[in-house]
Length: 157
Image (tube, rainbow, N blue to C red; front, side, top):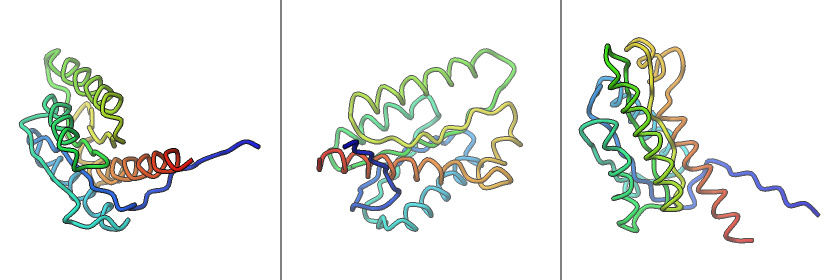
């Protein structure tokens, strides 16, 4: 018999660490609002959420690693906004944060919801932070909860 498991976004209870970049704060504050509203809607208590602010997206993986090292979180959410400028800096930051996020998830074994926007212009970022394209902070929270549930199911087998 084949065993098929599907995670679902629910609180187990789940303690969640959220790392948020200050750079492009007009966007990241909205991403955070979406993530927190979604966590609450799925039963995560405010007391079970730790939010840390970092200078920019590049610092997010380190903050998530430090949150994981506390042993007091079951899932992570990473929120940031990188908007293309006139230099190569955009590519370096995007590559660093995505590679760093993958390493944090694999090395810690914690579910990580990736809510870092990589946009060509600010209007695109705002559209994805509660505008016409939804709220990617909310989507990242859903991903973290879903993966936490799947991890719990696999552990129980």
